[in-house]
Length: 232
Image: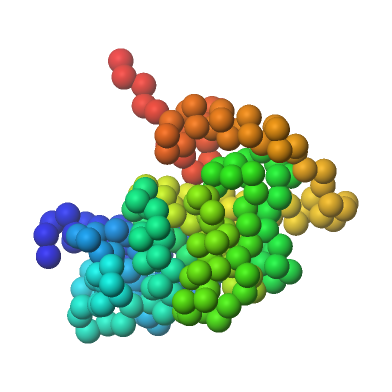
């Protein structure tokens, strides 16, 4: 195990534990992975986050083969298919965050009720059709719902997000949960009026102008993104 791989394994453990400490998931639900050496590293199946160690993080190749004494997460197929489909994906976070999950139980995504929906790369955050967890059918439904976006909900299940780093994939999952919370609050007064397709197209253009990977946003809308550092 190289120093770089060892560090990546530690970052996966830190991210998995952060899911629990921030309330984005509960118990052993959810999973975290990162691209590594023509494959991926992923959290093991059924191991409590507090018991994770670098040796328990599972390496899988892009053909779905795994190495070591621990089984990979039962959701490994979704992670693997994201890496196969999106070259920009370097990390994936899947969680059962409360509000995103609540929306998903109604087979509802998050429409353009707020311009920050564009944070996931599209004019809405879609909800994938339901399929049994761990199946190819679920992974196929997820890929269809992503449709060049970086996050989607999973019907009667939760949400999944990817990014160019573990930090940004985790941050995007947090943004999706915050948007789900806001949308559910807005629904108390009725269905909120969506922003127009023309406006969302302009918002997406403006987001991209801040960086090809949406590295920064102005002001207090920074959310999951790292702000640029001033050099004196």
